[in-house]
Image (tube, rainbow, N blue to C red; front, side, top):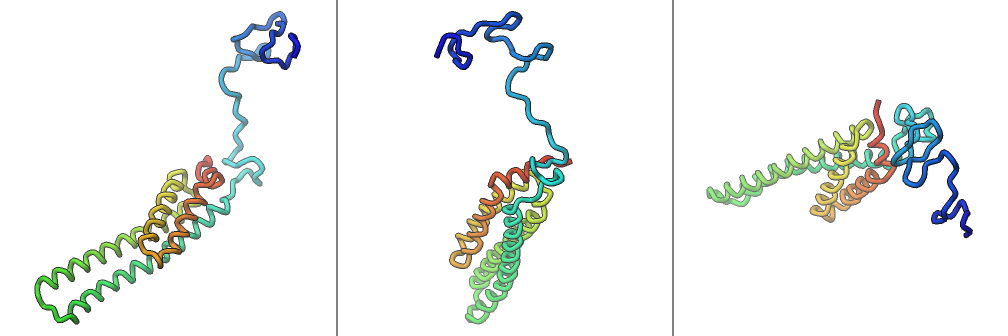
Length: 194
């Protein structure tokens, strides 16, 4: 490197007349000096990304797949909730067929029915939440994305607690998390809306 090499960042370069020295903002003559980061590229109308046809952003395939998986999980949960409500009647039948007539047996039967009923209601609430998330995937913002990730986590945990039957729910919950958390999913949910 020579002393006057223009590519040498450490070399002393001769200054041209009329140009400020080190530490002064640089820019074209007659322009406002620019500080900080370079200027951002212009924003495209309607929230499109570069190269999108018509400027509109299409829902990525991963988000579409996560939406279908939410519908599938909601179907499983509705069926599970209805079967759990049916199990409440089975508890009454089991107590009446056992021949136990004491108040203690009735108390345990009522406790069992209460627990089973609570599980059924929670299952149906999660089914309704799954349906709501599936509907909001098309228009929802970043909050929908975060809710879908949290929902996928709960679905995975619920599937683990109900193994071996819950293996499908575990797989779908993990895939929902992955598809919604990917960069194209994040871009979909964080796109500007006009």
